Image (cartoon, rainbow, N blue to C red; front, side, top):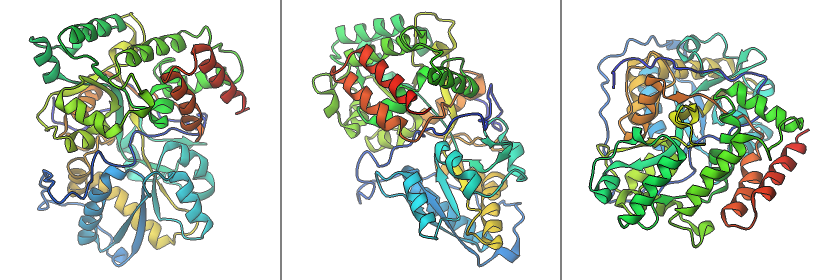
Length: 458
């Protein structure tokens, strides 16, 4: 893997023509108690000796707030805020969204109370819904040039700061596969659904009864799984938006749409080999990380945001984990079978309604510090464990899942497609997917639920 600034790969910025809402990858919560006094967490050192960033001394003493909806980096953000305050004199209070709460609901309630956060880490959905009424225009900020392909434009303006790149697919544990099969495993040899099934069957024959962990949460099923039917339309965000519009207008029949049937074929494979097949809706998310780390299973559909869960399950950063694509068919040349979905997820919105000019200026300095300060660059990657969307950031993530996504971005083996859907897509259609997962509905009923959902969005 080359150590250089993040270069852009085949990517399309999200545009105003896209519809509202994507659920980002992060999970609200941890694999185990994050406050375990016996837990020992490896901390990557930050070199504080070099800092060429130019601070505005007139902003020293300013207090701003940051609403954080990405729970797994709460402690890291507090550390980053402290480092920024030491250098700038600006105090950043990091406010966590309560476990299980909707970031959108939280920020709206704060606006209704007249006390919104200065900065809010939100899903793209929420930014699109709120930006033109609540957010400050960030189109003139210098970091825009470093985030080409990753900004979200709304009517030609940028209202949010792309915080990270996240990707998802079939996580594999290479060592477990090799120990079970008694031979080396090359993930590049698995190129189709049939290849994947053949590998699963070999693992079963070798004694791993159920090689796959499959989460039952509605956000996983309704967003991370189901949105492949939009995102693999052509592998772009604009294509995903076109797909959604065609479904809404009744011009794309899901009963004959090839990506719909291909997706269900793949999902059925995951169902068949699911370790929780007896009670799929009783599956425990925390146990899935433990099962994968311990070798009870070999695969877990998830994203690079799952690393904290695996780390809490005693996975090590030098372990060989990585991603297989979400195989859509048996064509090895189909981009969906060759590439991992990876795109900007969490966005930072600056309040343009209540925040004073001084507070807005301090918030803008904080965002630019993340991008241009040597300290901010390090802390984004090493402390927050984030894949940076900024071309000038020279640091690589240390955990194997993020390293794999980072590498795929460099190699052109990732497609940047974000299906921008309404806020309730993941909960409403996640519930429909749960019924299908539990064999309480068939394909026709699931498709009817999807069509009915989009009919209501007219």
